[in-house]
Length: 457
Image 1: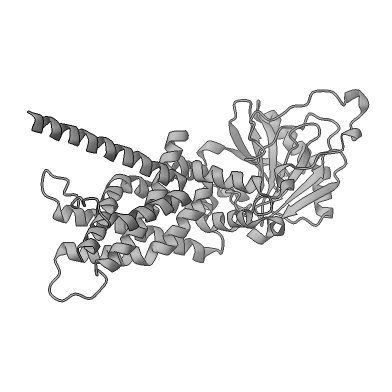
Image 2: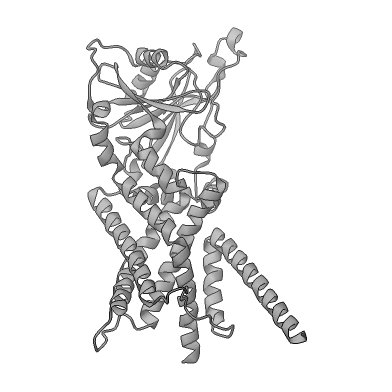
């Protein structure tokens, strides 16, 4: 019985400290996640004129003339991607400049310019920036966000353990005080949302700094379980179709080395040998590729036009169902469909990305997905608030009132096994445990040195 009590106290103490330190960050991430959950609904209202409106001009022009008009109007910017959106949405150009800034330009059914947006200040990008990097960005902040997510997993597991072992969920006789009521509500709610919350966190980890890179690298290194090789190394256009006299002329390339990975390629509109976007769109129609889709420009002279339908584009009016996701590769000179990669070609990791991210974002199965995610997030915020209330109800003024420290013993064995398992699954969590262990060791050695010095005197 004594060992069981010690085991419970270990969980309680770690649960307490984890909650105290990461709860503010978890609150920020959860609230921003709720904001992002409804970005399509918000943007449809905020940007109604850009998304669905018409320009003041009624004359129809070709899509290539529209691209030329946009590049003339927004000096220094060039079109890198054309997004043909679903339903009644206007077509969107993604334009970039040499500094890496982006602008979205919308054209109506006549291919006339309706208006533009600064990409960095759109609602979806602002919410995404807050949720993934707290607006600050950088390696340290990205690791901090990932670390909070990892420790949230520990909080949920340890909370469920204490709920059952502490008999909190059982009906108790007698009158309950305020702290006991908060404790029970905290335990019941946490137990109910534990599994949905863990799923939400793990489907968000593909974006994380360390674990996300590990997952992505694994998917690239093992195409059979991850990303098909064709998607990693796209085919090339038939360069022999370029006239011999101009074949060695230098062509513009993207200023971002990772542009292709992020869906933005180099600007090849200055290459006279490349087929026009209008011609390409005719080839797309002939290939029975329905909208929505994005046309991504070739990155260099032997690059290809990439025509993609994605389930997690993060663009209002562009997402499709995961099983409809496909990437098509068109020769930039002949317009021939060279090859394509669809959902059926993905490995298990690739399919997890494809289903998991829209589930995390709340648009995998429509409004029910949004409502479920919203309820789970609100419940998570509530248990954090109840957790703070429980602490404040028993806190002694001027003291932290942390749970009692449990001396090392056999009871630590199972706890350490759990930490090791979580540390393997979530490497950044494991690294943080090593840091904690080093701090504990330093404190222990300093305390031992202090005690030995006192005894010597």
